[in-house]
Length: 238
Image (cartoon, rainbow, N blue to C red; front, side, top):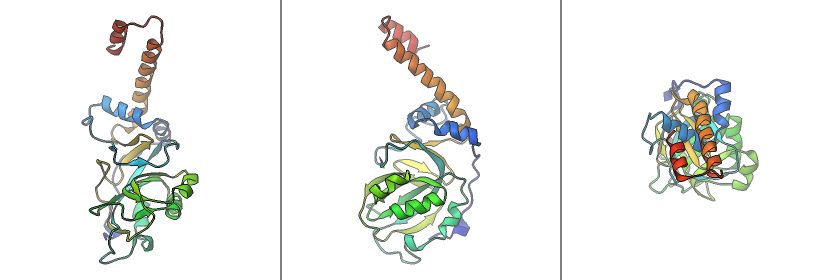
């Protein structure tokens, strides 16, 4: 396992409180729409694909800074401790700005042999400033985690911890087709998770509001007695 001392705190600009609240108030589709307007990346990049399930879709949007782990679950560690006996990585987690999102890549050939996080560790993570987690592996204890309002995205569920143990701390990971680095700003809701480019984060809310206003105008026109195909074409191109 990488020692926490090898972890370097990422140098990402952090949003101020007002910017953070504005961004957190948006749904993830609006965030994705706004990012597209800046043409900073390809439109098929920067978000999770269908491999992940949002376990608590009724919760409000999740916004936080990523902390990354790589783990294995299917066999005992060759050295070091199991995940549940190892707390050294907490120091590296706390080097990331709050609120935090734990991002866990299960490196096994068939991810999900063991559930990395259940109710006890969800409570611990909340105390460490985390608002949710993402993993291509498994989670468990959903009925006991749900009242905590701690969001979880996972590819599967498991009844067992199995041999969960950390192999790397703070490295680049890939979850649901999305590449994530420690310190990345992530926005998630029932639709999935979006990586928010740091250089755009403060500009996303204004752009998202303008796009939503345009959508409402289109919806209103579709319900209007004056609706026509030609009028709709003009409106869409305006």
